[in-house]
Length: 269
Image (cartoon, rainbow, N blue to C red):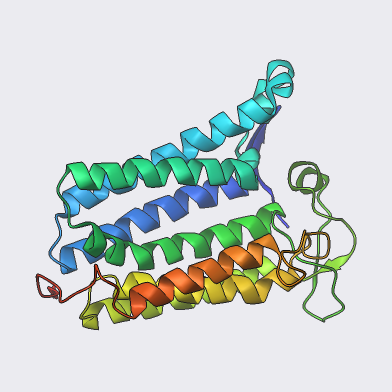
C-alpha cells in the first residue's frame, strides 16, 4: 500500500506513524467531549489522554530499542523510525504502560473511574479504527491468502522489511474489516452513552463487541494457521477475545460495582 509518508535519507516518517498521531488526537478529543456530556471534568480527562498517548509512544520506542539493541547501536534512525511503532509487542508494552499511568492519574485526580471508562470506550474504538487503517497502509497485521475479488496485494519492499508482509500474493484486507467494525462500534457506543443507565454498561458492550469482532476475524489473519492452540480449540488471540467477551458480559449484566449513575447525562447543544 503506502507505508512511507515521507523519507529524509535513512529517516522515515511512516504512514502508520502519521495516522497514529491522528488517532491519538481524535481519541482524546472524543473522550474529552463525551466526558463533558457525562458531567466529568474535561480538563482531567484530557490530561489522562495525553499521559496515555505519551506512555504509548515512549513505551513502544523503549521496547523496540530493548528488543533491537544491537541494531539500534548500528542504525539508530532506522530502529527509531515511525514504522517500528507498528510492531505488536512494542505496542502492547506501550499500551500496558499507558493504562497503568492513566488509571493511576484518574484515581489520584479523584475522577469517577467507571464513568470515565464508559466515556473512554467509544474513543478507544475510534482510535482502534484509525490504527486499523494505519496497519493496512503499513502492511502490519496482514491477512491470510485469499482468492476473493477484493483481496489486496502488497508490493512495497519497505513494508516487507518492517512489517513482514508477503509480497505479490492476494491477502484478506483483514485490517479494513476490523476498521469497519470499530468505526461502527464507536458510533453505536456514542449513541448508547446518551441512554446508558448503569455504570460500566457502555464499557461492557465495548469489551463484548470488540471481543466478538476479534474472535471472528482471527481465522482471517496471516498467523492463524501457525498459531499455537489451547486445548485443540482456540488460538491465544481467540482466547483473549473470549476473555474480553466474558468480562464485557459481566459489566453489561450489572456486576457488583455497577449501579445507577450518580449524575445524569448532560446534553450540550
